Amino acid sequence: MSSEVVPGLFIAGTMFLAGLLTYLFRNRPNYAIGVRTGYTFLSGEAWKKTNEFAGKAFMVLGLFLGILSFTANIGLLTAVMLAGVALIVKRSLVIAKETAELEDLSTPAEGEPNPIEKVNVKPYLAVQLILMLSYLILLAVSWERMPETIAVHFNDQGIPDRFEPKAVGAFLIPVGIFLFILGLTYLGRDPVVLRIPKGNTKAARILLELLTAAQLIIWGALVYSLLYNAYSFSSPVLLEAMVIGIVGLIIVETARLILAQKI
Image (cartoon, rainbow, N blue to C red; front, top):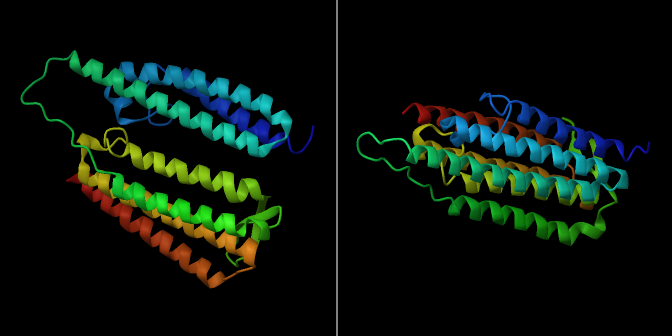
């Protein structure tokens, strides 16, 4: 078996196993396995329907990726995987929300209704889109200067220790990460989807700030990798400063999020 086929089979097997476990736990709400959003925890029926769909869909996706893996085209496999996961997640969230809301409508209300306030996610999305577009512009300008295989990870001394084809390491994986965080940010307009208790909009805004900060951190790491591969730029001191800044930012924002949820 070709060494280029093995990674694809591993990805396909992981997707199939994730789907199988999700399907097996479709009747057992838990905090470890399955589609775990605020809506699936609000309703047992929402949990069952959502995870039944997601389990079957991920198993089908895993089988399809298994077939694609024999093409030994990791770029195509990655693109199909990202598109498939995005579609499954989107549909799962719709099923969860619709089922929970229907169940809620069938339950007699007590007291005055207290609608959940929506959060304006446009400023966060705008910042993240600017980061993604600026990276893609720099990538387009630098594409021809990069070798076919590029460094995508560096050790604490600034020495590269992991490599990928540039189509995967400089384009598919970065775009996938950018879009994933953009998707989470968009979902943040409804705090319940992200399992924020009682629709706490203050906690939701802090989480959106954390996601935007994560996007900025990823942007910095990707730009550094691009500059290294295209222009031989290297600075261990800058890498150390980025790591320290990342740790500090995560600690501060996580503490703010915990405090906001206690209010």
